[in-house]
Amino acid sequence: MNQVALERGRMKAPPLRGAGGGRRTEDGRPRTALGRRLAAVRRRRSAVVGGVIVLLVLGTALLSLVWTPHPYQEQDLGRAILPPFWMPGGQTSFALGTDLNGRDLLSRIMVGAQASLFVGIASVLVGGALGVTLGLLAGYFGGWFESLVMRLVDVQLSMPGVLLAIAILAAIGKGLLNVVLVLGIVSWVQYARFVRGSTLAVKGQEYVAAARAVGATHSRIVWRHVFPNILPPLLTVSTINVSSNILAESALSYLGVGVPLSTVTWGGMLNEGKNLFELAWWNAAWPGLAILLIVFGINLLGDGLNDASS
Amino acid sequence: MGGLLLQRVWQGVVVLFAVSLFSFVLIFLSGDPVAALVPLNARQEDIANIRHQYNLDQPLPVQYLLFLGRAARGDMGESFRYRTPALPLVLSRLPNTVLLAVVSLLLTALVSLPLGILAARYGGPLDTLASFLSLLAISMPSFWLGVIFIIVFAGALRWLPASGAGTWKQLILPTLTVSTFSIGLLTRLVRRSVGETLRREFVTVARAKGLKEAHILWGHVLRNSAIPIVTVMGLQFGALLGGSVVVETVFAWPGVGWLMIQAIEARDLPVIRAAVLILAVFIVVINLLVDLIYTWLDPRIKLGARP
Image (tube, rainbow over all chains, first blue to last red; front, side, top):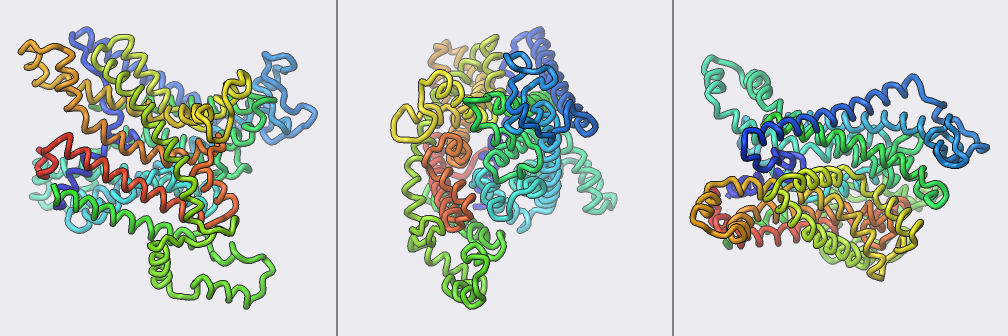
């Protein structure tokens, strides 16, 4: 009976949230050698474009730590809702315009990159650490522990992640670290299930049996032999998870249950800007474009990594 | 067949049990629930009274059983904000949320299935375009897309209303916004799944037999690609129900999601609890239905003997 459940679990698993199997080699069927080569180049090129976008945003976030065109909190009602520089009334020193309090939007977009990247990366570390550990142990040792972990995975997967995150944040309150924690908890299942599957596959290999035969301890086998072998696909899953968590963070902050407005986030900026849309559409446009750019870049990179590893 | 179904129902019960435990604990995560009920200057004995009235002076397991018993009878407590029972309040908003999810799922299927199949079958520029657009779609922040739709179609062009529900015109923008992500996701999946099936040996055999391409595609390829597609569509329905929390708020769409966000702002814990439970029950039922569709699509699953 358990076997069926596990089979079903595995079958149902990969496409969810596009993480595990959602982005495996998608490429159809180049029939000739030339076609295959062209496809490979195209894939690599998209990965390169994705990588450049990610580096650009990362660089912006780092730059904003030491320099922004204007102090990002500086208010001046005399220059409230200035339009972008190319529109009538715009000023080149406020290239993307200003918000209702006269704060420079370009500076705030730059600073907002910090929170997005921090939440994206930190939450993946939290979820990854939790999921990889439990998945490795479940796959390697099996037994009741495996059943328990996999049942927990089943339960959590039947709830949409956003809903779960909103419910928990509603209870524990908003905050940057709370968002990291909650997104980590929401995403651990993807790692646990995928790592357990890979561990089961690796466990059957001869070199693991050989390591055990020469007297290696379980913990040595798990960390020195099994873990390095599941690392490449793990990186792909993590990359794509960074983008989905950035998207989730911006939605939570937009809804007002994520990062409080005292920290500049793109979701929060959009929350502040959405009611100005008739008056100053740029307040809502730039933060969303920034989110789209970084998420698109990471997804491109993830697709490229996925193609390369399979 | 009966055994598998029974097992799936049992699994659904386990999930519901876990969700009930989660929504029970939820209230305690926020600190002392009494604090949400009484004014700041409440007297000590008033607080004790309320604690007793809500059974908060009982041991936690007893409280949980009381909670389960009441929930089973449809009593999810009273909304702090509206002073009416929480469950009917949530249920009255459910049809709007389900309507949005169903229409979005239909739109998703209508766009993704043909697009994914054509991309996998013919490749070339169409494939490149479909890949690009679907990647863009899954990278799109839905709430931003919604705001942009409002700016363009409600603000600048004045074609469609920006908010509310009741007429078909009000359904258009929320549906487009909710569907974008799932269209991207499903197109990618259909394209990959059909592409993989097209490379299988039985397709070559069918071609060698001289079968028409259309027959191969509809009779052999789609039937074999159907399982992952149905899986994801079932899961997407759950995701649409959950994701609608965000989009409902953007468009002031009077569904469970928007109600939940308003309840969070008002710290209306019984309503939050009821909304989470109702959505979860709904999703469990949908998953069960998807399982039934499986056994129809792939008889091997009935026997529990998948290769």
